[in-house]
Image 1 (cartoon, rainbow, N blue to C red):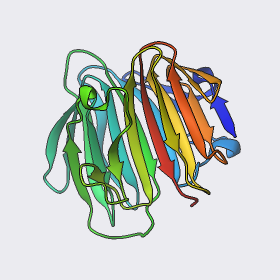
Image 2 (cartoon, rainbow, N blue to C red; image 1 turned 135 degrees about the horizontal axis):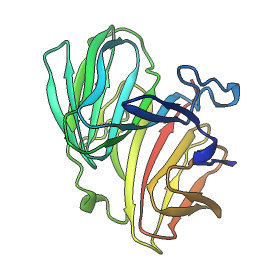
Image 3 (cartoon, helix red, strand yellow; image 1 turned 90 degrees about the horizontal axis):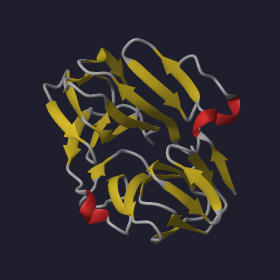
Image 4 (cartoon, rainbow, N blue to C red; image 1 turned 180 degrees about the vertical axis):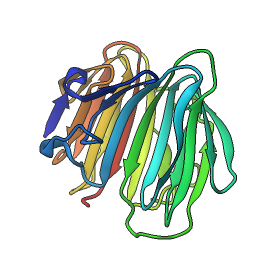
Length: 233
């Protein structure tokens, strides 16, 4: 089953500094049909205006993966971490028993990010934050694991049975992905246009996938895809 969720059908929020689109129920946008997908709880498509951002606030018991699509996001937290994550790179914040953080666009141009929250398998634990560079050339024509709870040595760690992967595809290129029985996959093309087993997606559409043993993603134009694979909650 592949359920395409067009970008125009997503939940929306806008104020003077943030333009957000929600793939899942979040804040004042509530859709019982889009509450969660396996352990994937949140996929927010955020555009943050220059010199603005999320003031310090708290989280607990959530694995929060930020994929930067455009610009630079600046992170600070109550553990003393500070980092600048650039387009194509990833940061992970494992909230554990509790952490305060803030995320800012300190640049003169808008920042665009995917904010992905995955439910951990165990609550509590010491919080941590980490970021890593993932050059797009390294994932040209293939899926690369960005964050994982499955002992991937080069991936950022998360405390759940799940993975976040990405690929950069030229027009006409395809990549396949095998799905374990009972797993839930959610895929979004950050840019471009693709077909997944024949289902058509444009940039920033979502595809909720289950009960498929394998998917083939074919780029109809130069595309960048992000994929999350989790188990049932």
